[in-house]
Structures are given as C-alpha cells and as structure tokens.
Amino acid sequence: MKGLMKIVALVLTLVLTIGVFAGCGNSQTSSENQETTNSESETQDGETQDDAEEPIELTMMIDSNSSQVGVKKVIELAEEKLNLKITTEVGPGGLEGDNYVKTRLASGEMTDLVVYNSGALLTALNPEQYFIDISKEEFAEKLDDTYKESVSINGSTYGIPYSSTQAGAILYSKPIYEELGLEVPNTWDEFIANCEAIKASGKTALYGAFGDGWTTQLLYLGDHYSVASADPNFASGFEEGNVKYATHEAGLRSWEKLQETIPYYNEDNFAATYDDGCDIIANAEAGHWVMLTQALTNIHELYGDQVNDIGVFGIPNDNPDDLGLTIWMPMSIYGNKTSEKEDAILKFMEFYISDEALDAYAAEILPDGPYAVKGYEIPENAYEAVRIDMQKYFDDGKIESALEFQTPIKGPNCQPITQEVVAGQTTALEAAAAYDDDCLKQAVQLGFDWE
Image (cartoon, rainbow, N blue to C red; front, side, top):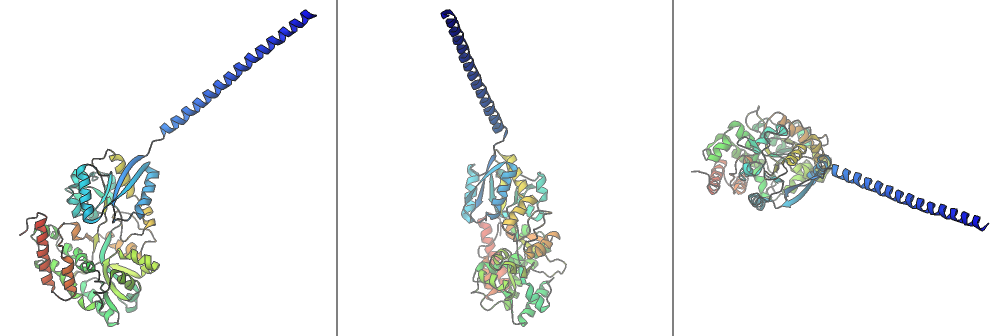
C-alpha cells in the first residue's frame, strides 16, 4: 500500500512539474509574441512617420506698411495644400525699409520670400542678382501686362502682386449724378461741364481735402494715363532728361487741368482732411473727389453699403475715344535667388495668384482695384466701383501705371508745388517749370546725366 502511495505521489509531482514548465513556456511565448507585436507596431508607426513628408519651411519678410489681413489666409491654404510651413517676419517700411532690404540682400541673409515695391524702386535693387526670374514659368503668363512691366527688367520678370491694384481717379456721387441727370464724362470739357452743373445746383462740385497736403498731387499724378497715351515715350524721355513738363504739350496739360479745377472746390479745402473727404463723398455732399481708390475701403468700414453710391472714372483727357485709368501697382512678392528652396518658392508663388488663393484673400479684405491677374473675376460682393467701373478699364486695356512706377525721378517738392497751384498762387506753366527744376536736382543726386 505504501509502495502504491509513493507511486501516485511521484506521478502527481511529475504532472505538476510538467504543468509548471508548460505554463512557463506558454507565458514566455505569449510575452515573446506580445513583444513581437509591439515591435511590429512600432515599426509600422515608424514607417508611417517616415513616409509622411515633413513640411518645407519657408520664410517671408513683409514690411510694416503692408496689411497682412489677406495674406495670412492665403498662407494657411498654402500650408495645407502644398505641405509648407511659412513663417513671416515684419520689417520696417518707407525709406528705412528700403535700406533694410538692400542690407539683407547684400549680406545674403534675406528670407526665402520678400515683399517689396514694384516699379522704379525694384530696379534700384539690382533684381537680376538677388531674385528668381519667373519669366519662363507658366504662371507668369497670368500676370497683367501693365503690371508685369513694373516687375520686369531686361526681359526678365521677378514678382507677383501681393494685393490688388488701386487707381488715382475721380470718385463721383451716383446720387448727385442721378439727381442732376449727369453722365460719366468722356472728355475733360465734359467733366468741367458736370462741375458747373453741380455748382449751379448749390452743391460742392469738387471736394478738396488739402489739409492733408499729399492729396493736392493726385490730379497731376493720376493724369499720367493721358500723358503716356499721347506720348508712349514720355517716361523714358523724362528719365533721360530730354522731356520736360513745361515744354511738353501733354505733360503741361496735366498742370493746366489742376489749375482749371480751382473754381469748384469747397471753401474750406485747405482745412478739410482726408477723413472729411470720406464722409462728404459717402453722404453725397459733393459731386467729385480726386483720390486714390484706397478710400473705398475706408468708406466701407465707416458706412457699409453706402460705398456702392460711389462710382469711379479715370481723369479725362481731350480725346473722347481714349479715356483711361492711372494705376498704382501693389507691392510684390519676390523669391530669393540664393535660397535652396526654389521649387517650394515657385509653387507658393504660383498658388498665390490662383483663383482659390485670390478668393481667400478677397474674402478677408475687399480689393481697392482689380487684381493684376488675367482672367480672375472679382467676387460679387466687391465694391461696384471696383467690380464694374475699374474692371472695365482693365478689360479694355486702358490702364497705365503711375509715372513713379516707371522712373525713380520724382521731385521731392511735388506736394508744395501742387498746393501753390490749387491755392491760385502760381500758374500751371510756372508750376510745371518749377517741378522740372525740382526733378533736375533729384536726377543729379541719383546719378542721371541731366542738363
């Protein structure tokens, strides 16, 4: 019996021992399987992270005078759709900004993208040395021809428009025009006749906001379409010193027009300000205001849909078949030629002037003029003065960039000279001659061979 019990005990011990080893083996296998699973999971996660490309980082410098309201939205879209990460930095504006940009470029420390002036100031930067030539890119064909001239040198194109254009033009009151049965003038004489009719009705025909002296220049500056239309070589001849306002028929005519407006201004024109002008034209208290169309945004912010009571037309000349608009070109975006991320820069520039990006920009801030992009339809909620009045000039090819976008020569005393004209203190001919002398001094300072 004892022998039998020993045998049973031995068998049970053996079974328990085998069970323990089997359990240990299963536990180890399970642990190994779990480790293998975790390892495979980590590998798969790692592969997923490797397969997802990291965003390409770009930097963009914007001067402090340029609004970032619209561009921020475009950047958000570009980051989403192009797998970019774009960091903006704000640089100084004005003359300080010019020097800052030149220093950064010369030192090789410029951002991948830079927002800078179009036109004559671009030329002074030596863009062929610092900026990417986009002239052979397909998207460059979308740029408005007049705009493209302002960012092109020696056949190479460097920039795309940062924002919309604006014009130096005549803002007019639609309610007053409707009340008096007036039509948009096709000639300067017709414009003066409209001023006479408005004055005769007891209303202010032409609002002067000359308490802000810079506004006195706008009729002369905004008449450049007429000058260039009469003489396409005016800008080059002026820069070379061969053409003078006082002795050029179309050039002198701009100063004569300014003098001819004197009888139609409000009596307090030298006390009134730009802000006053926005109020007066929005509330149909004056028939006309010679102004940059940036005022439309100010008026919209103050008076909402009343902005659509205001129309825009170019400063008329003496040819009824040639009414055009003088355009102030927007700041432009340029690609840094020394950047190692040229492909990403070009993709961003192409996207920036796409319909999708422009729609996003316009949804944040309505344009003060048409965009310098062919084929783009301005949103329906844009100001009527832009969407209808100004767009027609673009569609008809009746636009010209202001002279300051064609040559760096602009007399520093333009404002006081135009102030003297509207105050009746000097004649158009005397003012034109004084401005020629003013430009001569600046041309010499800039190194031009003027006599």
